Image 1: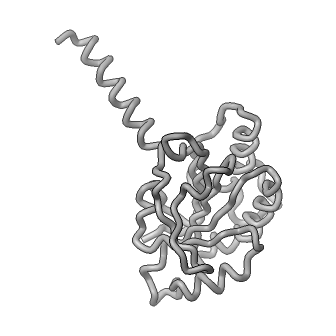
Image 2: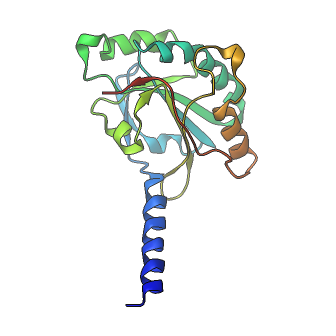
Image 3: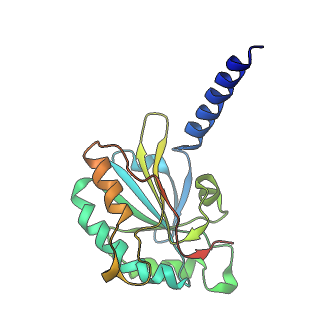
Length: 194
């Protein structure tokens, strides 16, 4: 086979594989800790974007971002953007990350913020999430959800007053104005999910 043709086919396969990894199934399941019901991602189809914030009750970085995420959710609530917390630590009851603990945490949040448990790390693994807090921004398509951003919320985990780049805001503003996403990934700072 011609070497140039081999490289071309290889490049096409890699490109297709990368694209496929950025499409998330609408059948991905989340467990709502407040209602004790499991839902699928297709319930968010009517939203312009879904911002999934992987969190933890015990992680100090996640605690620092709780109010910032709440403020972002309020900022974009009238623009058809849904913010949800996803806690992947339900399998660690000894660390006070049980469904009951998550329910208490969820009840302390604003009403427009949903709180889900990722009981078996299915969602975390599907999205390649490694830390809390770590954000995934998804937009609905006919084939599933397209991952448009993954990583840090902003560039100052310890002090909101020192934030120069809010990656979530930048991405959402681009999504809502149909502009190209300028930053698709930014290394998150936080606690490693085990």
